[in-house]
Amino acid sequence: MAHGTGATDNAAGSAVAMEVMRILKSLNLKMDRTVRLGLWSGEEEGLLGSRAYVKAHFADTATMKPTAEHDGFAGISTSTTAPADSWDLSAGQRNVRPIFEQWFAAVKD
Image (cartoon, rainbow, N blue to C red; front, side):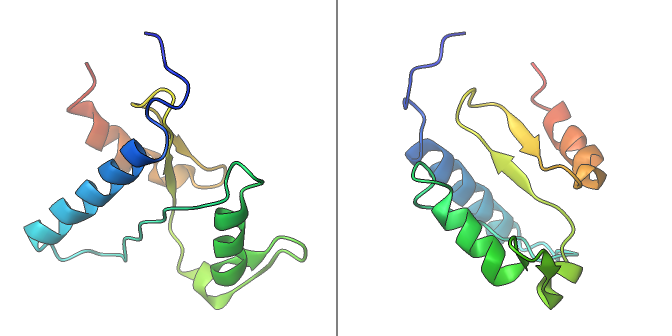
């Protein structure tokens, strides 16, 4: 499968993420945890948006001193756009892998 440079960049991933949140909201589920959607800017210029968010909410990477908000953090999944069907679980967050494996089993093909 060939991937076009930028063919699914930004807008497609953002649209999918927003649709996931819309569906979760429409189902009116009682969530065990807060689900956050992050849409970053400045990533091509040095991960500016995501680094600023991490510093504000989880830890300053210069000191690695975690914030109180970090203590309640369970996991993160990052949607990539190449290929459009890939997901990455950040190092140290492997505890959420079984959840994602179950979700994606339905679309394995």
